[in-house]
Image (cartoon, rainbow, N blue to C red; front, side, top):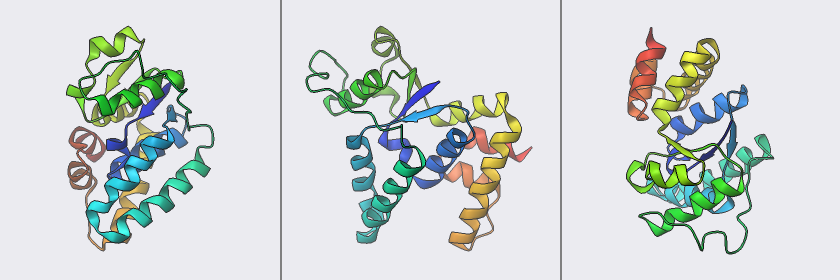
Length: 180
C-alpha cells in the first residue's frame, strides 16, 4: 500500500517518527513531493530560527532512508483537479503521480472523501491509520512506539509514558492501544 504523507503529518516529530517507523518495518510505502518536504521545513520555523535548519537536516535523512518515496508532479497535473483549498491540490496531484492508495492528513475538511474517491484515493487520519496498523501488526507497531518513546525521553529529559506522548502528538487512540 502506498500512502502520500501530507506536510501536516510530517511535522510534528513524534507523529512523523511513528508513521515512518511503520514504513520502515514494511507496513506501507510512504510517498511525498519536494514541495511537501519544503512545507514541512518551513513549518518547523514555529519552534524558532533553529527549527527550520533542524528540519532541513531531517528532510535529508528521510530522503536517504526512503529513496523511492519522492514523487515528481508532472507540469500541468494540477490543472484539472479541485479541492476546497487550492494549496492542497498539489498534495492530490502528488498522490495521483505516486500511484498512491490514499493520503494521510490531519486536514479532513480540505480532502473531501468523494473528491478523493473520484481519483481512486482515500483519506486517513494518522491516529486511525496507526491504530489499524496496530490491529494488523501489534508487535511491530509496539516496537516502533517503544523506540519513539525512548528517543523522546532521551531528548526531552522527561519521563514520558507512551500514552501521554502519543496524546501530545495527537495520536490518543494509538497511545491507549499501546499502553495495554
